[in-house]
Length: 319
Ligand code: ACO
Image 1 (cartoon, rainbow, N blue to C red):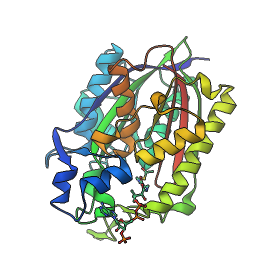
Image 2: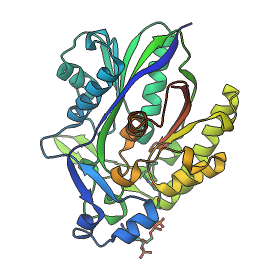
Image 3: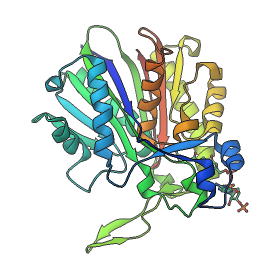
């Protein structure tokens, strides 16, 4: 059976940077509060013209170049996003059109901050099942569009961006094991509950979060799924070279690493300058560490993410 392996990575951040000091001019907060509770110093925010598919395009082009493939070889596009350009067509179809390739299957996956784990696992299974051989997997978000910029409890946490990988069929092992989970009973602690009906937005179109409840749930769920993914793969945590976690909050990342018994020296952290970019955060962090030379071919990498739903997952791979 074919293995699936990451052939290349790419990412993109919009050029506008919003610092904690700039936020403190808009809402009652301070750099000290934000840094001490979250570890975030700044985040990138799209311009009025930029959309999720624009960010996805830039990340995808970088991943295609890094994989050294021709874009015409891509036979499946999966975009993880919770902030699509429009209700339909999917952002994956819009991205396909912007890339100038046509005909291959393209669809979106919605699992909020865990979206990239769901998209990568889906791509892996398409390859294993012989239905695709070069998959463009993207996590892209404009979380700034679902922020209430007067709500200091949420607007300080999120940012915009995109990350992408090309996952290809390979004789060499790549993805070793993946595990996903969801529990809709937690729908009320993290959501954006608006609907469109009768030509109007019904309900609140901003992200709502019960921060302490999310914190508690996230640490336990991430620790459990990371441990069980390793156990089922027969890989000891000492064999993991790098943990690439969803970048929600430094305290969640540190607590999860501690539960796994991993020192922070083996954890990729991009959160301070990016904030929480939801489905984009894991591929952004992965690309960052590949490009700065920390992540190298042959190393064992554990990716893990959690988001609203709740939905969470982990992917163990050999890079
Ligand atoms: N600046 C100043 N004060 C603030 C701010 C802010 N930006 N935000 C909240 N506060 C205030 C609150 O109003 C509250 O004041 P009060 O006691 O007078 O009412 C006080 O700080 C404490 O509020 P808490 O919500 O209890 O603060 P907490 O210590 O729990 O920290 C935080 C909040 C950082 C959100 C924390 O709960 C957390 O990290 N939760 C995890 C959530 C997370 O990371 N979500 C990301 C999205 S989900 C995901 O990606 C999985």
